Length: 182
Image (cartoon, rainbow, N blue to C red):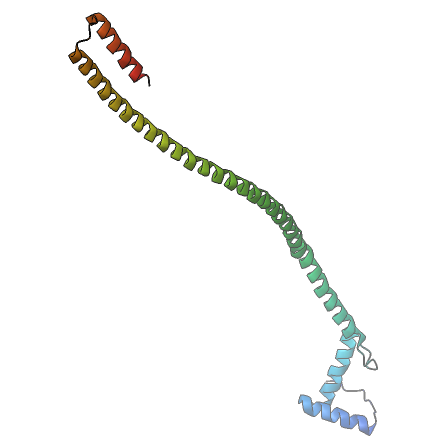
């Protein structure tokens, strides 16, 4: 079988010490570490001289760009409609506030009107009570007057004034009607 280890690389002693430390840290032989480094740089296309690692920077920038685009998408899909809706709700709330102010003013006017009506109703009840009292007094007065009239008629009859019975009856009827019309 043919030996695949036909190439050799020469490097300074300081580099060998560094390679020794790296291989001890990784727990691998120096030859394997060198092969893995070559494969790493070959696969990633990184330049070992570039300590700033431009590809890593590009990946970070791409990651940040993806995060920013995600936030922009969320903002567009969720936040902007929510702010638009909340703005509409604010406008509606202001309109309702104006309507409530108008309704409040109307209720205050209606309260004043109803207070006036209730005051007039109290006065009307007093006047009805007074009218009822007057009606009762008028009935009592009629009753008293009727008694006086009947007493007068009885006494006149007993005195015997010479007047015909028809005239007496007509006078009594006329006086009684007049009394009822009071």
